[in-house]
Length: 635
Image (cartoon, rainbow, N blue to C red; front, side, top):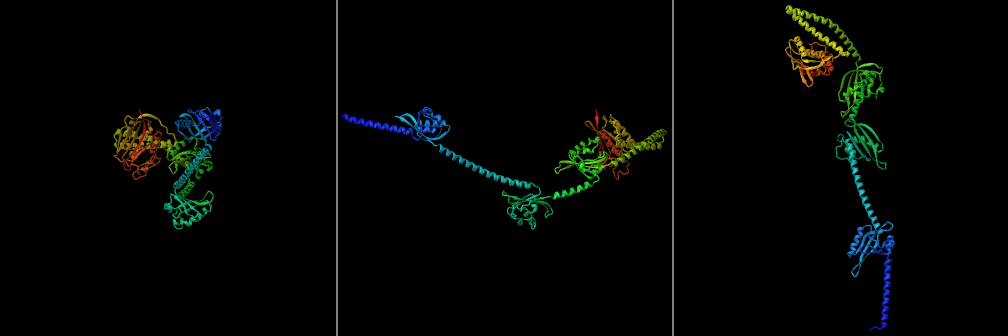
């Protein structure tokens, strides 16, 4: 049994051990409390139950601001906190778990968390978390990552720029080649300082002896015909010396060329090559020669030749135009053509322009114009559209011929014809009356010879009457005194009377009337009668005895086509074009014995114009002719 002394010694030793243990606990607590490594403990709910000073210093909080709060309040990523909590409760030890914690000053600290669970007698007590500040390291890492990313992006941009530059170079080369190949009749050379080819392009390469697919690096003396390089050499040297110039020359084949030469400089403004552009201007030269000849013809022409725009603005004016109108070129260029047109004829120009814009040609249009001194002159105008190479109308060309003297002569002639016709008509009417009286008496007395002679005399008198009437109508047309007395009348009776009279006068012909029943027209009966008399008379004159002449009608909607058809000598195509001109006579062996003055068909044409109609002819030589016109019908 131990003694009291022994017990006291053991008790003393136990007390000393306890004091040593307490001292070690205090030292350990102080070590942990003041350790440089941030540490915090959290319970199973994630609530902070203890924190050391290093962690408070790291985040800038006081103990009362930190302990008792959920550690989730300080995690930037709530998912990271939940992951740490769940894995730690599951007794997993975490090492260097990356996380981000919010500091009091608003900054964010990058940390690595080491955590494990403290258990006492198997019971969960708390989670111990050591926090390692790696903010600077993370920033360095981020900076390095950004740097690498920037480098990668720069490399990508550089690669793209190089690819784009290569693509642009390729496009530029293709564009250059396309431009060159689309400049017609052109050869383009680029030569270096040694006169060697850098490129050769153009659509006339083969014509000028460049037949190979590539000339890069070759010298002209190696590929050009003998002598050609010697001619070009001094020109190359001038361009490579810095001179920009152009020359005109002829090729060995006799073609005209203009050659443009210019130096090419690099970014240092140093000449490294020369551009040589040769353009075939043979067509231009020929056009210039033709233009010069045409200009000379225009300038020396006795007719006034005037050009005008689509809007009727005068663009050219020759010397004869100045003599005719009295204006100098400077006084009219840029002015409206209306300055030459009298006020009562101003409506002519829009109608003429409309026809010309449709591509029509106005030929021998007789009208009146006014000069600078206000004198009215008679002109014959021929106006044609001017077209560009694509066929587009770009202006008009007008040839004006002074026909004042001709008009005055015609007026005097018409006055003479009118006077003579009037003077002849009165005695002819008396003669016709005497013949009719004598004819009636001869028939009554049975004097066959007298009847035959007087009948022929009456027929000739009627012909003379028709001719005088034509002359009088012509005079009235020229004076503008012709007037229409339109009325509705049935066509068939008029045609029957005309056919009957014609049959009486031309007993050797067969005259038929076809399909003209029940047709009513609105026209001047006397004028239409005069038209038909002329057509029937011509059919009789120009067809053989025994042949058939048909006077017929064809209805087409509200129009009736009236025609006179014969089996006579026919009319050539060339004569048909001028058949309705005043005083025009067909000159042929078959017609030279037929009398006439060439005014009948002209009167027919003019009368029908007053009826808003026109005369037309269909004919072949030796196969007869059909003359026809149309009139509006009435119900």
